[in-house]
Image 1 (tube, helix red, strand yellow):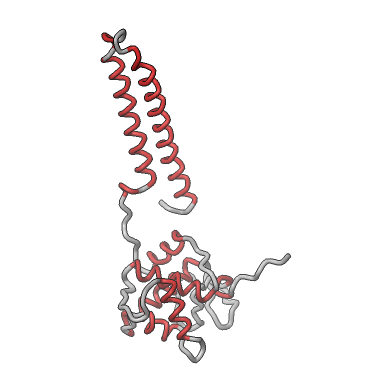
Image 2: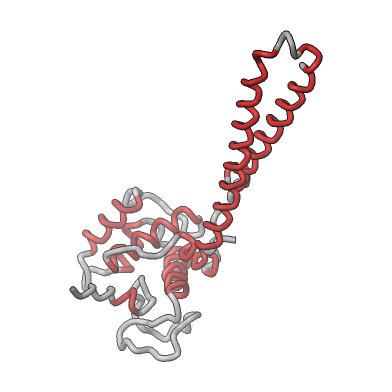
Length: 220
């Protein structure tokens, strides 16, 4: 059983299939092994070049819709431009004639991903890789709200459980003088103590796993 050969754009680390010109792109491979398309050192630089081209379409040529952008990116002399426009519109969920802003992360990210998929039959790159390329192209993703990250959520759970555990201990101490009359409550307090301890450990586990997972994905 033989594996399928990756698309040309993926092999060249040039997922937008930018044709060779005199443009001195950052990250070009020292040896250009493809006579028609650029070869980059890594996919990050290839995605960056794709993003920078789309930004130039807007800034220099005033192309701000999918129909306009793809009309220049994939002219009908070489492509089925109508089908390309429809594919990108369907993939992004953006109408062909809606005005976009290539300096806006949401628009640029969506268009870059859709073009990569159409050019190569797949979009194999992680969100972290694409984000890094867009940052190099001058467009940063919106800042994440730390209150909603997995690490902070796990920390909140652990803190809340620890506070609850202290409250149970305090309650047990406070009822000590009336232990004879409230003896039936003690087993339930012990159960609550163990339950809150379990929540604390789970919260800490979430924090640790989130940091390991983020590091594995290249997030900092």
